[in-house]
Length: 182
Ligand SMILES: Cc1cn([C@H]2C[C@H](O)[C@@H](COP(=O)(O)OP(=O)(O)O[C@H]3O[C@@H](C)C(=O)[C@@H](O)[C@H]3O)O2)c(=O)[nH]c1=O
Image 1 (cartoon, rainbow, N blue to C red):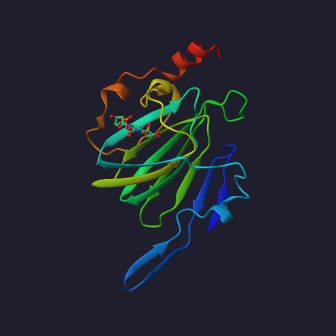
Image 2 (image 1 turned 135 degrees about the horizontal axis):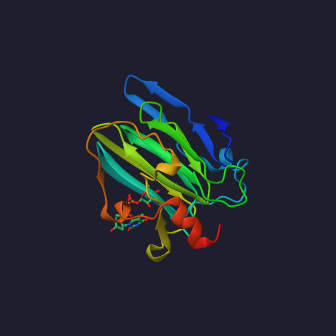
């Protein structure tokens, strides 16, 4: 396993070792002892799985009082993954981290608590598995508009987008800043 730090505090790229043979492959996607140096206090309490067709865009989501750290792995296909830093004290506050994640190498990204998260499906299907450090609280959930021009996200061109009504109606980053007095 190889770990790369990024400019974003706590946001890591993880490359699990993938063992391939004539049957297929084997990989450890999570191993507590190996990861505990990175996140001594980390514990996952919920595993999520979603399946998306090409052009599906989910996000950018976060929880206000119950922020979730997320360890994301793509089990089939490829996504363009996005994390927006909403931590006021962070030196990367307001900046966006983007990365392509693919089932080809099972590489992961860990998005720390305090960032909004979303992704766009680039392949015909994407099966996305992610571990979360807190539970889902529907009433605590919020979003930032994925197409907010001020974020400067260069979403790859994939044709027609499929986006939930909730995500289409999300607030802009500016509106969120105003609502929390930042
Ligand atoms: C997120 C979530 C949704 N649900 C339900 C609510 C709803 O009926 C259905 C679909 O929910 P959503 O439309 O919010 O699903 P989705 O748009 O995939 O939401 C997810 O997006 C990605 C980008 C994230 O980072 C996740 O944390 C989560 O917010 O699943 C749960 O039961 N538990 C959960 O943890």
